[in-house]
Length: 106
Image 1 (cartoon, one colour):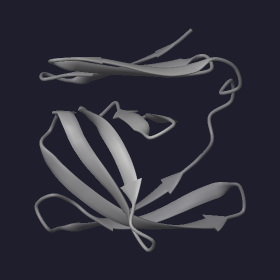
Image 2 (tube, helix red, strand yellow; image 1 turned 180 degrees about the vertical axis):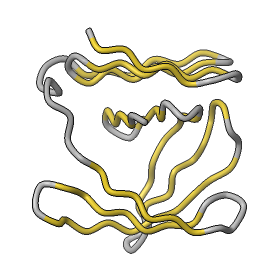
Image 3 (cartoon, one colour; image 1 turned 60 degrees about the horizontal axis):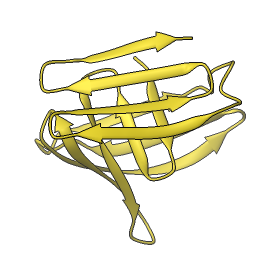
């Protein structure tokens, strides 16, 4: 699974993409493409990894450990249309549409 974040826009290769916001204590992930809903989480650093604990749109909870990708330096951007969302970070690209998420390394 690959998650890319460019500014407030994200794309997750599991099949959802959208925007993030922060309310002072939790980060909210607003799903705009793909899997509908919103999940929330809190973060803390453990060495080079970012640890997230959160709640899924269905109310279940999760723990995820985010590891930085090599080759992430360079161009970043986000593009969207009525039924798709694309985020690029360096050599990494994730495309999400209503059917799936896809990851490429350039």
